[in-house]
Length: 619
Image (cartoon, rainbow, N blue to C red; front, side):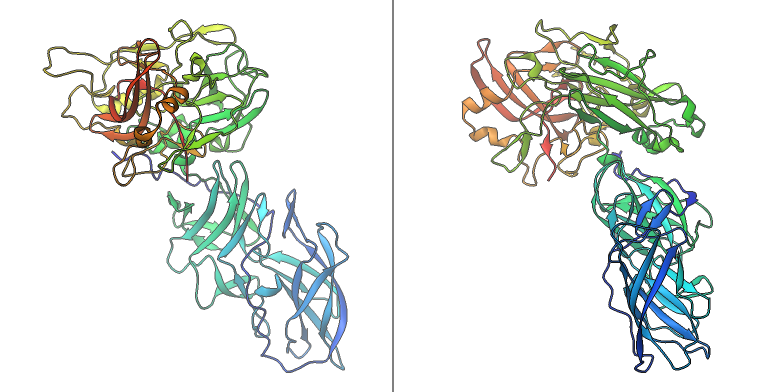
């Protein structure tokens, strides 16, 4: 099976237009269609129907420095060329503005006015029509559009009037991100339905001209949790989207989605689920908002899923805290052990808030539930960790501690962090000072991690089962009658000849990108072998013994039989690479006195074991 590399979707819905702007610098208007004209100074007023560069509620506003193209249409139907008018006396965004410039004049100067925003978008035009450019490259602006993206046409039909009223000629697509991105590309997949390029505007409608463009790119430093907009040509067409180069599922509406001028189509959340983390860092005393989007995306798109659309009920979706390894770690849990959900219009756009206690650190597991069952787990790591890292000689930048650690003192069990059964994304707590699993609770009530010896047949069924039972460790069977059989192969299969369905859930040497199952926080991922086949821990081979002894706690492993093993005598860490029915790891061996014995930078462990993780920074 392929791990979820392209699981994303669009949620179309309509709402009123609310924003404006663009990016791409376009050549100034062609001006060779008229003779040289006498000019005069003129000051105009301009107002917006619903649209423009800065947002204020559902209105859009003029900004200081805005420029528009203005021309006269005389009684005989002839037109002047386009003239540049600039906003004057404007110090902040406003729904109305004064514009000043020079414009053509005649002895018998009886005219009406038409105008275009932005100035650069107006091209050589025949009388009675306006030619425009809807830019295919638009700058990202949180909560709005980049400057000059939303092309607007203004007119004053009053004879010799000087008050222009503008409205957008393009439609808008609103979308929300739940992870950082550098670009979003919206593409029309319908024949003959361009979304950008050159258009003729007449009678309130756009007609495509030469060089139609099928996609619009919104680019920039786009942040998780923010809303962005793309301006496109009106029309009815199917669309697809890509986020930072990763394709998003195409819209399925037949014959397509209708995009109207001056109206926003709300696409909802679009996301690459591989980039939505399963672990969120929360500093003590602070709060973090987390989307529920991924839980639904994984169940709707995963090959192992038994998801039913009828399960998608906002009123039946809850966020439940399963366990905390420090009592009172999260402070906003209600009496039903739930966290509050936002009241958004769409289920996929709901968010929940996690608030951490002051002067505490630790780990918690939070479940997103729908259809009456646990569906996805979010790991909350409450820590004052500031992103400190070290750069190894092989160029990888590692966290300076294990994932989930509450201490950097390797003699303190808090340095062990949390443990992950191979390729599962949900954490299991580490041992306390007594060598037993840390005491777990929620609001003072004890919570336990249990185990099962259940095996999935078929394997898809086991994947469903562990997703619905996140606090259950799969205790692997051990059959000593199998010759040469040292450990179970995986929590998923007992047969070494089976293909392990979950092998590529984590990153690998053939897919060096973060996956949907990767346990690391945003900006971090599991380390993998390089192109030459070198282990990510190969730098250990030339590292001084002191470095190994001082930086890696002897956390051992949570063994396949649900017992902690080698705690105090071995440092064991997962890599991301599957090697048959095992996954690569790194291993340092110490004696009972803590003295270094040796190490193996490319060891392999059965996926039935749970090991700590040391994340690397995503390049």
